[in-house]
Image (cartoon, rainbow, N blue to C red; front, side, top):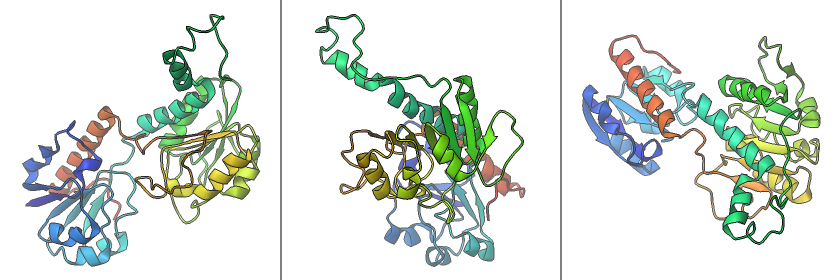
Amino acid sequence: MKIVITDAMTVTQGDIDINIFSKFGELQVYQSTMPEEISERIKDANIVLCNKTPLTEPVLKTAKELKYIGLFATGYNNIDIPYCQKAGITVCNAGSYSTYAVAQHTFALILEHYTKVGKYNEFVQDGGWSASPCFSPFVFATDELYEKTIGIIGYGYIGQKVADIALAFGMKVKIFTRTKIGDPRVEFVSFDELLHDSDIITVHCPLTPQTENIMNYESFCKCKPSAVYINTARGGVNNENDLARALKEGKIAGAAIDVLSNEPMSKDCPLTGIENLIITPHVAWAPLSTRKRLMGIVEGNIQSFINGKPINVVS
């Protein structure tokens, strides 16, 4: 059996042993694969493992021996699922592996906005505290999370974990979601009500035709001027030009995002150089322990497929 990994660098950069998959057969590892290289590299593969490599119908048609695609991810927008169903190719994802990590990163971004830990550390390292006449210089405005209202868009595993943490801080939680669940701790509201009432708006929904650009200029104009926008989900959920405009015009007080519509970030991205914006490079999902958990799920998916009882099937 031949196994091809097309984009290993997206899940390990030397800190995780990718060779664990060699126990299933001959393993060929590529750190990254350009679109024009995909067909040649997977043409003889029985199993393809990937994260973001686009596996479209024209590419898949050249892979005559392909029986299984294993994703190093929860999302599968990069896979032509209808073709895989027609061709009998099983596609399995890795769901829920990053719930704790993404919720943690969400609050890291929120806390940086409200507590200014990074800015205060820079102030101290630059000698500001040593030069201060006061033992406690209030250089940057900070605030509590207690009794603030957080609006969560999307209430899957990550959204629910974010709600758990918010409640522990004594926050009020409002939810806008397609499918409501029984949770008396939170309030389910309309999209407009969430925008109007929330001090923090955080996105935890998948990118679909219904959610693409749901956070646009009109949406930001409905928010409190003091509101903070957080996105650790998918870049396309917000319109980046509109977000930049809203921040510059003071429609919202700040934003912190981990995802962009095009990654890596382009040099001409409209979100560069905005003072009240924090950007991290799509790393919310990627703590070492989280990626180790991911490897275990992908390994288990392959073993289940080989045993004739595939799990986490999305095709």
